[in-house]
Length: 511
Image 1 (spheres, rainbow, N blue to C red):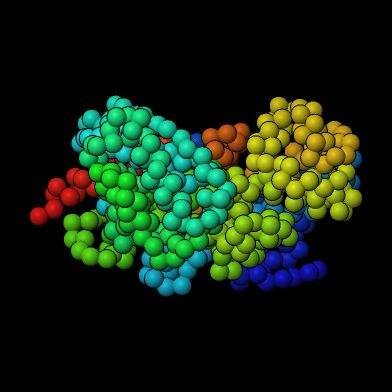
Image 2: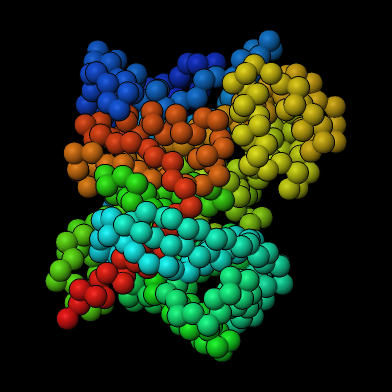
């Protein structure tokens, strides 16, 4: 019998902490203990059964159902090939322990894969937010300029205009990109007849930053499809301010934040229990309200009790601490990405990468003779993952087969479609597990009577299973901690305006 030790856990005949998974059985039982089996229901999800096999029952509630095919031998071979993508409860609990350690290291400014950045936002909306604000939203290939009016904390007016960012701008000099952003602001204000008005602006810049105040911060690294040069050590808010001033605009950059922080702020406006913000879309990230004394500050903060901390969990594990869950398929996706070896955790769960992961796994199965042909590069997207999952839920397969035929250029039958649907389910399940580990760890750390989690992003909104899986797994991983997942709308726009209003309130309060 093979025995290995990974990250301090002994595992007999185990793959990622659970026995090799074949047709619903495990070959070998995970060593170790759980934190206890919880009777009853938390947040509507049963957290386990108290019996002599309680550990095993809890552990296996995280595993996806086995592949069901008429050819049972083929089903076993496919599941064996996918076993590295199937994480059991013990493995996920270990991931959570590492996540907590990385949180503590990041807050203490020790070496960590988590940035744990102070956003300098010490409070959330209280219903007094008033005024007219500009908001800029930069994070993808489309850039938005918004004009928002708040009365008593409520949004009463919203004008929006979108602008496309070309490949040349996303990959060229950073100065060119910011001049383009300022041109868009000028165009928008001219269309509103407000080019001479004095306005405060909230800048949603959805990339990792090192904040120095609520209105200043430096880019740490580009992510997603951006890789502009000449931005090292540049205060992005200051650069935008200079570009706006060069066009004669009386616009002041009042706040610099990312979409995750904006989601938290916008969610808190709708529900005061919101204390965690999550993005689960093209990429993924989280932020939460941390005790102010645990966080590094530049400057005084005597009045602050809590502050929003940007975790930047997309980079979780970039230092190698999560290599034990990394598969050959993940390595293939990472190697082919724009920023290889960077933001590796995001590549397990972000919508930009789920389609690529689906292609990588099907390509691996094809090389082993378990699938007709590998998909062509970039032929399967995250939308296909959701489509395959939808058909799997309904018991259909025809649209899946059609999409696979187009992607693979080979005949695809019912069995092949069912295999692809199973792969989509396995990678979706792992994505839900990993984001749930992060949320559950934050819930336990905050230890509040109830926490609402504001979540935005295309994967959360459009994937047919993700939300229900997250409800289930968070409850299993954080029993005794009541929570609610709340879909958030336009945190990068509305949240930006609300944060600008909060900044104005803080400034008025200062001596």
